[in-house]
Length: 133
Image (cartoon, rainbow, N blue to C red; front, side, top):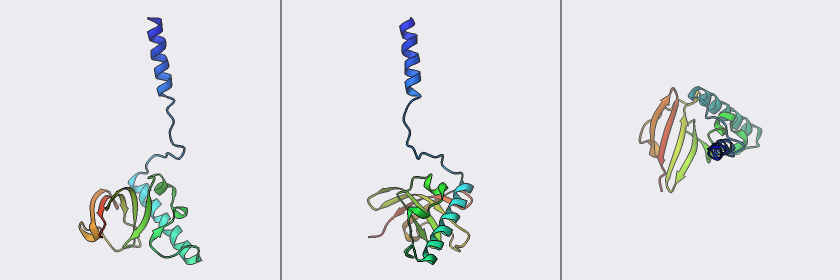
């Protein structure tokens, strides 16, 4: 009986010692992600204006706000003035979060540029995109 209790205690202790990635952060709320997307855009625009970044639409990781980084993106780019956070990719399919920001007049429409949107809350969407060949 005692050895069974010791074994259970050992399993409990060891299961609590799982290693987690050092940069693991909780995913931001939709409101927090919207604010982080705005900050990411501002950072990127400042970089372009300063001449340290090319105006390509692809946003280098050095410009990502913490809330965007917390999503562990593969890449981040601008689409019609909004922020796309690619979290998964397989072949010609991208998936992740799409955030409408204040400077954009574009509201997401399913089918535009291969995107399908599902609203999470406010101006934050889950998206799937089939990239054109």
